[in-house]
Length: 439
Image (cartoon, rainbow, N blue to C red; front, side, top):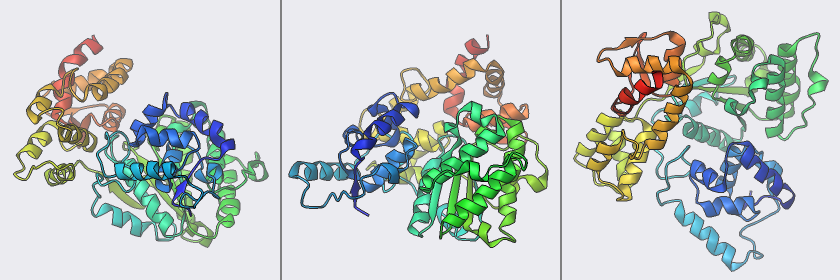
């Protein structure tokens, strides 16, 4: 494999179309989300060389199969590359060690990623087991996607085939229909494995979509590959919003896991299910994929991890007082912590100024807070529930589905069947703004 790749000329339009289709209004927005320099994204979309890891990550962001669009005959290190291209690539490589604005997942190889010890090794060992199932749960922006990227990268280095599907990218009309959704699932797995879809050869209306899907995976997909397949399903909580589909699809995943106990072909399949909330769709215990396999819960950063991240940004926080102050405000929330430390490392703001302005419209979290507020304004019942949590000094009991949704957003922490604010930032910001939202 070459150390760098470029998009084939005949695939450039496809790549540019994928930019809009995946919700990126500009190259800059993709660059900020992926954590790359704007010049790197521009090179990618104009058919210029970028390094292999960057190429693969940008394809993942754009839901493209890198093998389909890459010019695999292209060798960046060959004698045909001109001096300016080499200088540009060296410049991009040097940027890998400098801080980038922390937005979205942390790129592979970034020095600003904190390894989840011992979780990563635990998961890597688990997916080596035949028929394994791993369940990763955490609210949004807690590092699930960054962890998943590293798990899949490790699997690739083991020689496994990998497929990663994000259910947030599925049209609602597809998610609401079991047959359409299972066909979408099969077609996308085949696409990432570089296989023809051949759906109609295995789909049988008389047998139904679940048996057709199972037959497709067993008789076509798993038999077409020689190595284990790691299938990662991200944001599975999206299916919870469609209870009738969830009641059929989730037991289907469980049945695949059970098949591996008796059928060697199913032992090739290793499932990773990633979700933001507890499941709130009622399932029988023996049909749920959420009570089997290896459960992984991603927690907030500890004070020691905050200090470690600050050190990587070359901040001298050896006495721990600065880390404690950030923890008091942010509760160890990985994304919020990372954003704060980035701004402090750029000398744009002092810690005292950050702590004072953080909950306000002029603080560094204004966009983050406003994004949540827009959702709450559209869902007044959710806003009222959050307001009751923010205004009380004691834990508040909430309706289960509302609690799950607020927990998924990362705004509350659940303690038994009661809820408390997930951090002081949200309490300070929303205790006043929610009053106008709920009238």
